[in-house]
Length: 540
Image 1 (cartoon, rainbow, N blue to C red):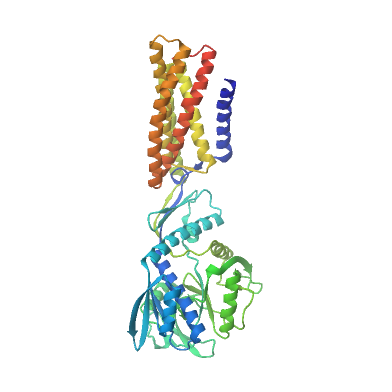
Image 2 (cartoon, helix red, strand yellow):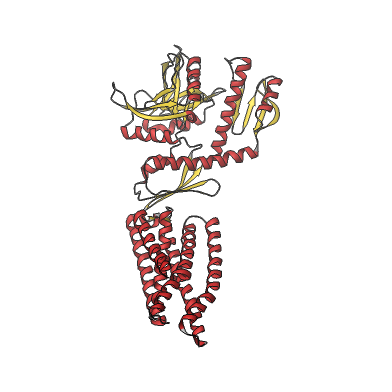
């Protein structure tokens, strides 16, 4: 008896200590904060994969036939790669890149190109990877900025839900979460004066500069406020084969200008090892110093060695930050990103680069902010409802079952402590639907005790004395309690498995509460009843 009583008392104390020590995480609907529904652009992830494979094929081609100085033998778009090469090279590509189906050949202009299309199963795999990688990256970014108790989970085939309790200003969170942070290095084509042939529309101007090779080349530019106009205009331009147009800030800082770049990235942020903020001792402006891993350092050294005298564009999220001239081969695998940052912007950029690039851009499909006053109001109403319900239940139990009602309420208290302690211990979040689950748990805990009490009364009506009646009633009621609770638990687990968002919160709290209710009724209440019987103060 003493051991069982000690278990009840110690367990109640332990549950209370866990709740006090770990605290209970409150969800967005209780604490207030920001909610975002993101859509991961999986189609762009597929396109980027195709571009990377095209780059690898081009490297193989140049190893075999030498670097091409005229039109590139490799083209790509979406899920297709076009290759103009001898038959033996095409056969090698078929063997080396099984992710692509060979679709035959076709004439483009006066050249024959062999067509390779990405397989459907490969596309699905890339899309799934893009979603899971985006989930991991967003979690890493949120952790980098120390946002407390975030809830980040996938929703459907291509969506991610981000809940940030306590964050009332969503602007910084949107920048952190939504920035693709795709770092690319591309060679600037200063040999091709493509923009000289373009007639700009009103508000878009044409400028000239001396390229890295000493040749005068043209570019288009606009004032800062007309960035969208320039972007829309260049979308309708048809750059030369193997080239792409990007926009970046001009040296003046208050204009946006165009760059004609090689379409295939020479190196990307996937080879990044670290990114830190440093101060320029001359300009006293912050910049981001990036370092590559061993593979990235080798690539960077090779690229700079092969392109001495050319400009290397440093691109972040499809904007050119700078395009310095490569003076010599650069060893050591380090580079700098400068862009007239504030110290806060530089720190933010370094953080998202460290967390890694998103595998594809994300779009904010929905966002909302729950104010702390609404959260407090929800907590207040939830507490009032729960306390009112508990008091009414207690009054009924005391009036109808007398001392036994007191036993039942101790079991209910232990059930609540058990539920909250498990939520705290595993870092689960309590939401408004969770409070509803807790209220339902209280009802089930009371029901469990009522089943036992009614069984005891039935035994007493059969002229049994009190102690054997308690033993018999408890044994007979236990089977019914276990059967009813396990049935509800299975239903709750299915709801948790297949539900989303608030429904899962309800199911989680209910599942834990059911286990607590069984512990409270089957073990704790029995121990207290035995103690009261021993003291001869039990009544029903």
